Image (cartoon, rainbow, N blue to C red; front, side):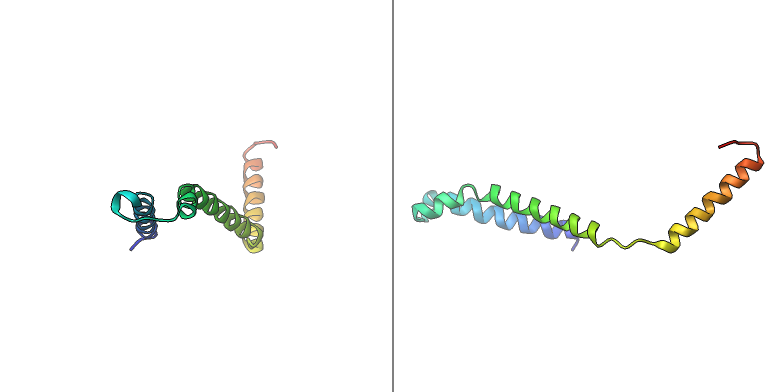
Amino acid sequence: MTKLAQWLWGLALLGSTWAALTMGPTLGLELPLTCREVLWPLPAYLLVTIGCFALGTVGYRVATFHDCEDAALELQTQIQEARADLARKGLRF
């Protein structure tokens, strides 16, 4: 199962549970008023929570990104070789 399918199944499960709980009176399920008051804005809370998690994950990945010093040196060498080759062919920098 792909990660997308896992997320979609999870969202479908959460969405159907939320819909069943919010439509409780029509289904014969009576919830206290405090539960219903918390239940209505729950999708917005989850959206904000997922956004914060995504932002934190991106920040963590950027902060712990490892530099590839060997690849950087190799790339700089290739750039110098390319400049020298182009200079031999008459291109001025």
